[in-house]
Amino acid sequence: MLLALGTYFLWLFTSDLWAVQAKDPDTDLSTRSPHRDLAPKNVDFAFTLYRHLVASAPGKNVFISPVSISMALAILSLGACGHTRVQLLQGLGFNLTKMPEAEIHQGFRHLHHLFKKESETMLEMAMGNALFLDRSLELLESFSADTKHYYELEALAADFKDGAEASRQINEYIKNKTQGKIVDFLSKLDSSAMLILVNYIFFKGTWEHPFNPESTKEENFYVNKTTVVRVPMMFQSSTIKYLHDRVLPCQVVQLEYVGNGTVFFVLPDEGKMDMVIAALSRDTIQRWSESMIRGQVNLYIPKVAISGAYDLRAILGDMGIADLLAKGADFSGITQEAQLKLSKVVHKAVLQLDEKSFMAPEFPMVMLDMASEPLTFHFNRPFIIMIFDHFTWSSLFLGKVVNPT
Image (cartoon, one colour):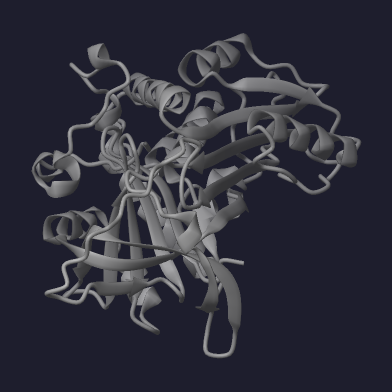
């Protein structure tokens, strides 16, 4: 029920992960899939951004929705001019001599349409972007038309001179858009703010094989050698795809959501988290998906709400998109204000991991093969979570969970 991994390789059709027949919410759209032209670039950008965030926050949780961030930056490029525009699109990984800008935005439009369709039918997801600008500014008609056409962007006026009121307005907007799932999006704003792009996503999937709530118990989670916290730990014993990686020091479990969503839970060996994160790539995901084994597994996963919130300007500057911070950044395609500066690009992602979904599942008796002892995968120490969609080939979520509380 997700939407996420990208690639140009034939292996996406032949490996176990991508051989699953995807559920296209509009079968007439599947003849040509412009969103798949974006996929490899989006996923490469996802892992690059993820590594930068992890490096900037050692020992802390990291959680993002890369495809959602890519979409937000593509929106900004419609209002950027000159070098700033080129830098944004190249920073996302696009070669403008091979893929015209119109094709990039058309691909994102199609991707947005598929996400929206799936959220209406098969999953609990709220995803969107909004532009808040000072009341003294007025959007150019061309920017307003293009962003509505491709991204259904909402633009709202705010009184940034009253920072507390402006932040209250933004927080209320996000709370309403996510049915109360995302609250306190922003703290008080600086009165010098003029333009803020907010990007948000909440997701709760429906497991193909849900966990039984009666099996969830409080257990220890070992944050590090000196810190232990108590968490509700979900449990199921069933036939699950897994891998003891012989290349990287980690174990991997693959679960499926109803629809198109695939989840990788990655448990690095103690002290090897950084090594595993450094090696994450499309090739790594390909190798894992081709090497998975099916077997009887006792699986323990924390029941948590995982979230991350970021002002992306500084981290994107470190990745080469320096114009988001530069005084000479050219966003003259947004308003008539010649020296308009982008105040914030704020991203917040929230994922709810629990036993079941909004559909009430049944819990059949699981028959264990008593001839062999089931393997146990116990995610009771820092782990990596990655959620992909095997129809759109996009990276929906990347996370590093150090402390689930």
